[in-house]
Length: 114
Length: 113
Image (cartoon, rainbow over all chains, first blue to last red; front, side):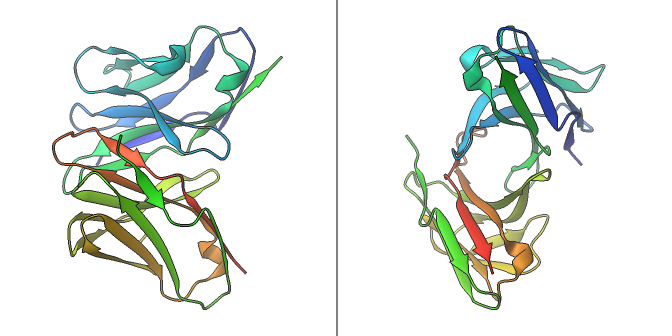
């Protein structure tokens, strides 16, 4: 069965410093992975997706993620945090089978301080 | 753009009431999903439907049922609401053509008192 684990429930960074949000996956074969973001009182927005093409995936708002099979990881990074990045981030895997359902991690709350 | 509309943004219901949460999508998507979102738990799948009148249980179906009489509409039903069903409920849809094309509604925050 496919699953994801987000290693940090809260991450705090200063504005202008790098962001690293960690996600490990479990899958018996090459998974399809996503990162979603949810700003306060807003809906879910897709940041980026990995679909077994390039291992380094670029998303919106300067975020990127690297698929590392040897480490079973799909960490989300951004070189320089902005105040507007403060939000909750979800690592997600497609659970293949009927309906191709999304399985979510438990979320990482990103706080950006001045 | 695909639009997924959830009829209520906020709902307050009493324990024991029958509650209907409605979700409508406008892009002829075959698949529709209901999730609940709780702090520290992420989103968990309650039920999904891959066609009209077809439904399958997700990871946490207990206390819920669903109805899909028309392709565009997917209803989540709480037969007898309880306080532990206080949560944010999110609906999503996806067509069969775009494997990765999930679209989420903005959510319904349900409080059961």
